[in-house]
Image (cartoon, rainbow, N blue to C red; front, side):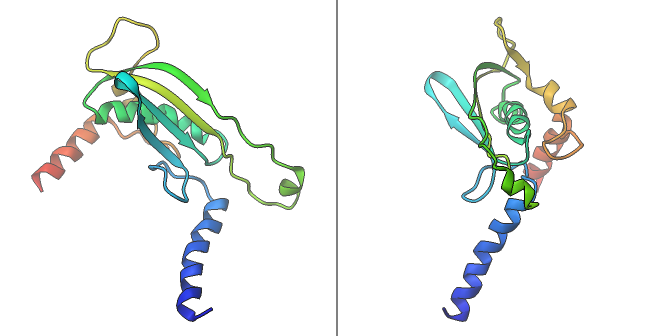
Length: 158
C-alpha cells in the first residue's frame, strides 16, 4: 500500500474509531454518524428518525427534532401520530468487561403532522415551548425561538 492509500485509510478509520468511543452529536445523520433524519410520508405526515449515540440519545434527539423541524417548516404545533422504538442491541458482558465503551444503537421514530395553529385533537405539542425550555441534545442550553429568529435575520442581512 502506498503512502497516499495509507493516509486515506487512516483518514477514514480514525473518525470511525473515535466515533465509537465518543458521544454522538445532535446532527443530521451521516454515512458514519449517529443523528436525525426527516422523512416525508403520505398526506403531510413526517417521520423523524434518530439513531445511535449513548443510552437515551435517540429518544432525546427525536423529541427535540420534532419541535425543531416544526419550527423550520414555519409551523408552531405538531401532533404526535405514532412512535416506534427500534430497541437496542444485546451487549455481551465481554465488551463491558474489557472496558470498551459501547454505543447504544437504538433507533427511535416519531410520525408527526405539522400545524400553524393549534389543532383540536390529542397529542398536540407546542414546538416553541419545547425549543424555549429544552436544551439542545447533548448540551445544557436551549436554543430559543428568539435566538433562532435573530440568527435567521442576521443571515438574511449578510
